[in-house]
Image 1: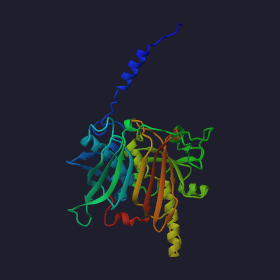
Image 2: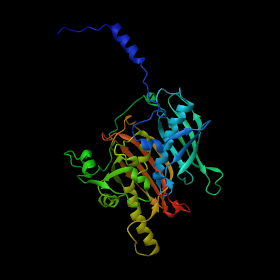
Image 3: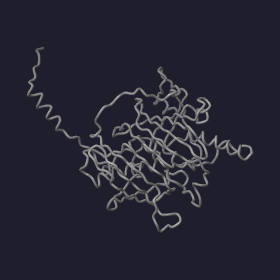
Image 4: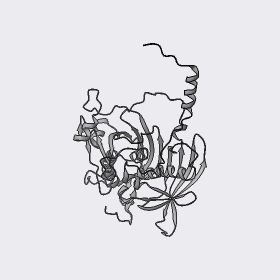
Length: 370
């Protein structure tokens, strides 16, 4: 075959044409996705005028009577997309996806309607920041709205994410328990099909009637929380998870759903339940009644750093390493790192949580039967 010669002019023309191509993104607030339809309905946000929005927090996404913090974070992720589509439609070529979410949970929310207020703090080409407030009827004065949650969200759209990238070599240490594959990794297809692979088995969360939000996910770990603690000597927990919103077996993890996963770690709570029961018995001088404390762990603050966007079609599996360093005086820290099957970090979160009786969750409220 003879040599192929390409002129310099042809190459320059091709480069100019290629550089003029503008990617087209689907509007995430108006395009009805076939992915996670019940979840999309549960996090739906509707514009209600100047920088005000409404949503409806679903009872099936609650812990007791309080909407799950990760679910609420997913609603706020959707709020951000909706706000920029509605108020700043020409600011970015693609979705205004959050890269940082910082939330303060000021008062307990309830399932039902909520109002969001959004303030544009900075609207920029590379990053933008908004201040949001979640308002709901006051429990003491039902005719008045009060701020239940406040936070800052920083946005950086996909086309603006350019710059230096470095492979750091970070991995979860110690390494997670081995699966059945020769290299020690977990055969996720086998784990999903049979519920077991190597040291990994399917986990059934405790108190399902109280922790209803945990029913939206399938979790697998190398033993339950207590078994992992005995093996490692600390409160670290490893889990693989599949998203199952509304029981949908075709559920997939999306960027918004990662917000929910960052606050979903029943095996870690399993550890805290056991330790709380033992500590309460020791303090009262009475024997442990049952091996689990009926405890609620409300989030006080939550900080999320989104590292890598998931594909539009979502992914089936995500791994979490959950780390608890200190539980003292009714307060605990939680650090969660989420990775995909390739070992890439998807998101990192840190939070401050309280350790209180489950009665604080319910108060005078009654749990809704689903």
